[in-house]
Amino acid sequence: MKIKPLKNEITKYLKIHQLEKKFQKAKKLMEQDINHPSLNVELLEPKQLKIYSFRLDKKYRAIFIVTDGEIEIVTVTNHYQ
Image (cartoon, rainbow, N blue to C red; front, side, top):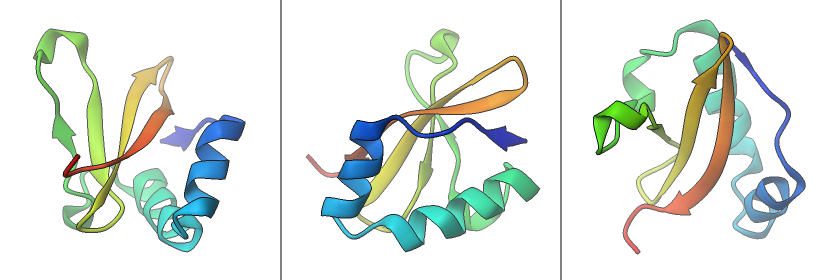
């Protein structure tokens, strides 16, 4: 599944938190297999909104939606804040 280009603020966040390399690795896995075990993809509550997350590392997660067969990363967050 293809991932849409990131918004500038997400790219900046990845750079500030030194997550660019981890994001590229996760992106490659997502494009090959959205259910890859290391991504730990989760459907978030409320489930009817169909908002998902996947793991970049133990601390950070990317929040995404699927539209027209493409993944759109909405934000990257600290999972424990």
